[in-house]
Length: 398
Image (cartoon, rainbow, N blue to C red; front, side, top):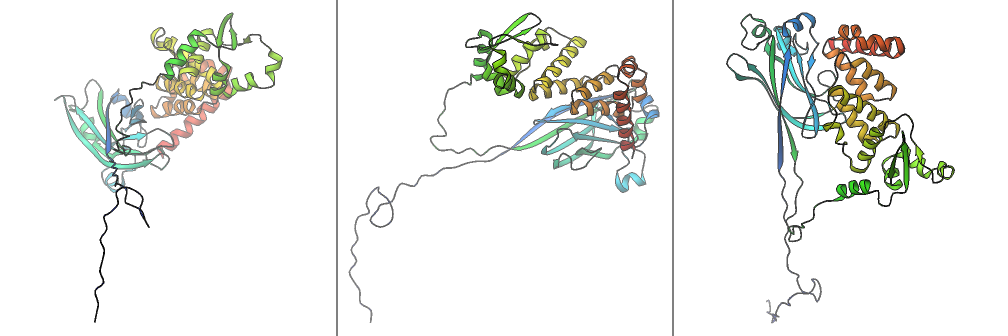
């Protein structure tokens, strides 16, 4: 037989801690969310001189658009007029296709993206979507077209549709390819506690403060003399941004220099001014966009690239290389290669080789005045360029 014992019910204490002799704290709830962001951008690639292009290229050779940015990564369109030769069973059974791809150029990049490649009907003025690719994860260096991750199709369009006398896609001996790249990114999860919802009305002013510091020269403790013009700066800022300035301002040479101006040889004052501006602000000096144009702008950026290499300012060196890569021409590619070789600019050097091979312009470059001039001054550099371009052509045709 069971016996019932009396049970006393006590009021629950408010507040306090849990466990023996303690109370229960109020339950606090936090939430977070995660969403996918899609960044889309369209690039229009005009392939001019299409008739002559067909007679000059074979399977595996391509022409390439300029680089364009989507989702923080560089992309380009590669078009193979005679096919890439890697289309699998469909390409083997029906070899009469042209191929097109969007390729990821940014090195050491990992991205999830999709692509629509469109061949525009010039007669109707409307796009005919030929190739769509589903979202796919790509890692640069993991294969693809000519060593780059690619989105597109080996059987992009039948060559007969382009090479017919009354082709709807060829107008003025050119075709137009529209490429829409979509990059997918996960937005960072945001906690929604009361503290997180507090809006702090603070506008970042660090970059403006550094510009003002450079302009007013307040607290400057080092001066440079460039072709008679004196520049005042702050040693701590320079040392923080350039290992070369750090060694010069805080290394053994500091005691020998004393308080005299530091003389900068073989550099124009405007170039040094632009170098200082980037060191303080991480932005290009406005004179590059406003006061110079065309060839003058390219020459200025070439000098700025040399200065960035000289003081190991890598951010500025990258921007200068990218700008020069996008402005390559048959007349300038040889001299750009020599500049890249002299200052060990691998991105610019590779872009020069790809420009020659991708556009099938090796013969035109060899006949250019710039190539002949550099061949007489720097024969070893030109031989290296020719060998790299020839080797790259063989790889593309393989």
